[in-house]
Length: 295
Image (cartoon, rainbow, N blue to C red):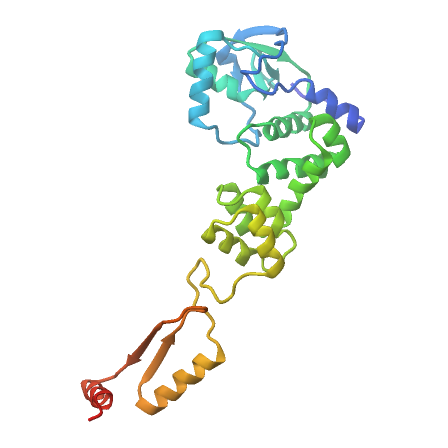
């Protein structure tokens, strides 16, 4: 069966109409929608183009336990699979479908919609950015997809998704950060508040490493961003600390006097440090010992 393309929709009204079909969560106590059909679970298949590829196992287990006790409260949104009889493709609700399988349900309630491929992708993105466990980078990427691919503005997204315009704008600014910082954000090593303080800084990566190393708060990160990274401290990767001119001069003078390589490690602000003298032979070591003993 070939789907005929639909006429383009008005942006705001179209997005709101799609939003009305996307349920927030299976456990939400909102009034459940009346299903169009109750179909055998084996006749429902996931959308192969679903942008979400991973599902948290613990959350799925919790949902499966809830479904075992109460059943599937909110129907899945499906469309008829192209070229197949009595087979339905999930538009929204794959998490519920997976949990229902784990709960060994034989049938599942569905709402059948005649969405085209573009609308299916749009709904998948909308559903994805409403996840409770979504990290800020993926949420921002979802907003960017909705704007770039479907022409929505931040104002339209704000109205339809129930998010403030500043929330959307601030998250999208995170996408301008270097990939390394975005990875720290995804991994939970820094928060969105930390990351926002680094946006536009020409030393953002170095600052982010220092924030993680020193476990700085958001307020401390904002102060650090204003004064720049502490270049006299060792970086997270253990890069050598730049030495001041006085230390370098002393090293050179001692090396010339002893005819051996002298290295001084004097941490900034510290009273003491260490000095390393390298010798190339036992004879050099004997010469050094005589010099130190005054012999």
